[in-house]
Length: 504
Image 1 (cartoon, one colour):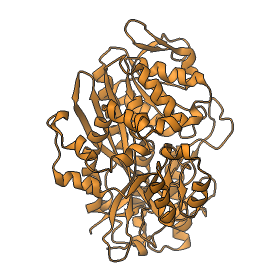
Image 2 (cartoon, one colour; image 1 turned 180 degrees about the horizontal axis):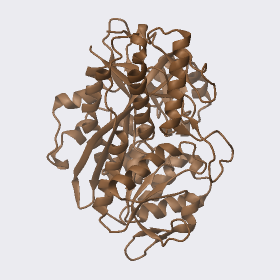
Image 3 (cartoon, helix red, strand yellow; image 1 turned 60 degrees about the vertical axis):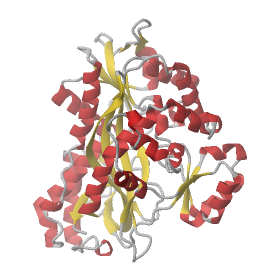
Image 4 (cartoon, one colour; image 1 turned 90 degrees about the vertical axis):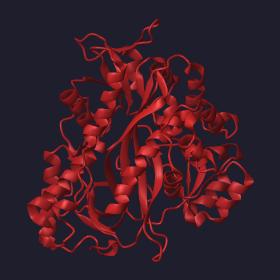
């Protein structure tokens, strides 16, 4: 069995060059693609580049992988129930914790939701991703999985990660990785069918809406480079479920979206020549960052969509539930049990062992809304990360940068941040990382950290508010150089990777 410090196995320069050529041509042939970094993006792209990728899959214990998959059921149900708890979200957003008062982006969303939350009672859909890092604080401590964050909006890279897993299976089948490791055998490469799983969740919401001829709306960002990850999902919905997809930005929807004042049905004008289509489900691949709302017009469109009877993925309350402050408050004594052990939510009650498993996946977290929290963060800065209510990568403050940041942080903005103990990944693991455009010699070996994401979906609310229909549906791996604090592929920090499972 290989160890982290021995990974990846040694290959010759000629073997590495061949693996790189095989990997990049496979990626280009199988839709493991990005649009080039062109500003602005042309309306009809004429070229594409392969997504950043790794040559070898990353090692992971089969036991830990199975454990992460099992945890997803509890996480799916937990965040569905949090999203249905208006009292709790109001407390975190404004009445006590105050995130919505000091963070303008979160506050605008929360206050808008308060004005329209009673206008429809249809189901909500979550396409989730729970992200983990391996934690090995010392040589004497068993390696464990610790949660980085739980994503409730725009949980991306499912389809591309499936293709990254296919790439590594192809390299194993075509070259056997030159016999460099007994662990690199087909039986150790877990299946990845995330595209079908994500499409299944959207199709379940479409089915629950139950209006013939309706479509699913993808709300997207202008100039999206990660368009192929979204398109694969669109093709799956059309080919396997016969559900058409309409893609539009907030600015396009401001002109095309029509809300029926009597039924709250949402209709959107598709491409020219077609009649407006009723929307069953709104899937947000935009709206998670303040840059998506440069003016009040985009907020007006977001609230119009929320007001509709279409099933939102996510709704505003589910998007708020994915915030870092909620993640931190859930770690406080007794809070998790309120959502997983109280029969007021229905018969799906979790055992104390299952609750403890969730708690064991957390690092220590606390708020910065008082002097005790600030002083603790100063004292422990070298082992911490500070997180705001932001998604998309590039927003956190790490270790030695923390004291100066706290010195400059206005006291009124403290409530928008949390402190989290840093996860200590195993040392010595390397991989060959490949960026687009570098040719056959572009693979660079570097020490790395790999992040595992487990996907799930949950359909809940509506006529049966206590019932949560959910499923664990797939996984991804993103790998970055160990000196990079952030983990986003689209933000340029990571490459797409996959897994080889080992015993232990």
